[in-house]
Every structure is written in structure tokens, then in C-alpha cells.
Amino acid sequence: MIVQNWTDPDNQFLKDWQALADSSSDPNPFFEPWALLPALNEFAEPETVTLLAYYEAKQLTGVMPVKRAISYYGYPIPHLSAWSHDNAFCGAPLTLAGSEYGFAEAVHHWADARTNTGLFLHFNHLPEHGPFHAALRHFASNNHIEAGIVHREARAMLQSDQSPEEYFAAAMSGKKRKELRRQLNRLSEHGDIRFDRTTSDAGLATWIDDFLTLEAAGWKGREKTALSDNVPNERFFRATLTGAGNAGKLERLSLSLDSRPIAMLANFLTPPGAFSFKTTFDENYARFSPGVLLQKENLDLLANPHIEWADSCAAADHPMIERIWRQKRSMVGVNIGLGGAFRKALFRQILRKEIVPEQSEQHDG
Image 1: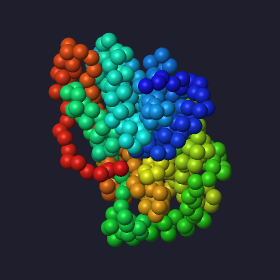
Image 2: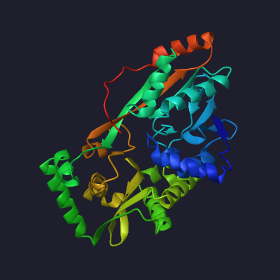
Image 3: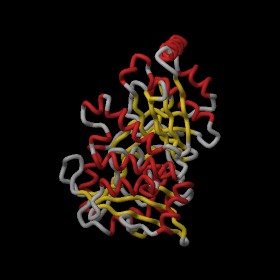
């Protein structure tokens, strides 16, 4: 295991990192260099966050940021954690297929050797039925190390062999589909409407400006939670979308009225998966459901031959997206014990209070 300098990474490591991201067994755009480096630069404390790189036979086969923490959900419990931030919706390490177990073992050994007080290593936003979580469970079981799921949420995802049209017809009632057609027709009475979808980075800077302006004009702006209300959040958003566009990983959708966007959406394309990162709409046209109309267009992800599933990145039980995206992706938080007998005994007591029941195995990306 090697600690990499994330404040000034060398070019060869960046190339190897991107190559690993492109073939990771658990796709995770938020740990790709074009997303993680801007996030680290904006939100991380260099003295507490470490970027781990795992090599096998001189090949990079695993990457994950790790944070030393002295507090756990408000309690004074020292531990190590996979580092994340509020705008990252997946915490799976980037791992080469077949290297998940070795990476889980190496991360645990590294953590075990570098903390005298930490009780456990915490992973958040892991795909419950993904290959890394399976490897982590096997490693813990094989080595008789206490570990367990301490949080679970199921959020909307898109996964089907149906065409976009077939999926939409199955997801929504005939009455609701008729209502959306009526809303689209009524919207067209106010001007020329146009749906745009692109993976090009042409005009990206203007698109980002329009997105931030549209979001700030709505309820997030009123509540001061829009991206543009927080300078680091805005810088992260601009840098990440620009980096994703340059890497060919960004898909942008927009619904425009007389050439002015009234609904916008950004997807990250990480074959075989995709992540629906951010969306916004003009509340002045809320009666026409522009966000839902744009999500209907987003079902064209089903026609992309490189995409097998898409993660909504939405909160569990989201009232809008779950009307359209009918599958669920289970995401979990996992703790695995560290240290000797005394720390393991303390961790065992904490885990018993937190652990959540197991669920049956299923495929969810």
C-alpha cells in the first residue's frame, strides 16, 4: 500500500488512476481523479486525509481516500473512515476486478498499523451487493474480525432490458402519461420547446453557469442551500463537471423554452453504470412538470449500449424519481474492527447497538 500525494499528484499516477477508474469492478465517479481531486482540494484537511494506492505486480489495482476521525456521529469515538463529502453519493473504492479481496486486506492491515486508538474502519455508501462489499465481508469472516452493516438505504435506480418507451409505459399509469402529454402541449403554447442531450464538452462553461443560475432561483436559493451559495461547493461543481466533460464521462440534458433552459440534468457515465448527479428546474413552470418531462427523456439511458444500470443518487423514497425509476439500489455503511483485544471488545459493544439486519442477495449494479 502506497500513500499518494493528492495535493500534487504526478502525471503517471494520474494516468494509472484514470485507467483503473475506467475498469473498476465497482464504478464510482466520485473517486475518479476528475471528481475526487477537486473535492479533496475544496473540502479535505491535508493533515487528516490520506490517498491510498494499492499495487499488485507494479499495477495500480485499488484507490481510496481515508480520513482519521475522533468523532463518530457526535460521539467521541476515534476511528478511520473512507473519506467522502456531501456531494459524493458512492463510497466504493476503485478496484480492479479480482483484486477486491487483496485491497480489502491491504486497507485493513494499513489501518490497523497506523492507529493506536481507532476502534474501527468505516465505509459509507457502499453498494450492498457490489464486489467490494462482498470481498470485505469475506475478508472479515476469514480472519474472524468483527464487522457489520450499520446503515442501509435503498434508493431509486434504473435497470431494465425494456426500451425507454416500454419502461415508461410500465412505470406510469395511462392517466399519468396522458397528463404529462397534456402538460407538454400546454408548455409548447408558451414558446418553442426543445430537448437537448449531449456528451460533448462544447459550451460546457455556459451550461454550468445556466445550471447554477437556475438552481439559485428556486427553493434551494431561498433556503441558501444552492451550490452557488457556498463558494467551495460551486468551485467543486464547476471543476468536476469540467473534468468529467474533458474525460468524456459527462452527459448533459436540458429542456429549453425559447432557447432558455427550464430544466437541466447532469449524468456521469461510468460504464457499465451511470450516476444521475444533479438536476434543477424553473419553478415558474412547475405546473408543467419540466423536471419530470426531462426525466422521461433521461430514460434514453436504457438505449445506451454501454450502460446496464443507472443510480439516481437521490434520497430514499424520493417522491419524484421513484415514480419513474422503479428499481432500487441498496447502499450500506459498514464498520470493521481494528486493534487488539481491548479495542475489539469495545467495538463489539458499539456494533451490537448499530448493526442492521441482513437482506437477501440481489443484483443492484
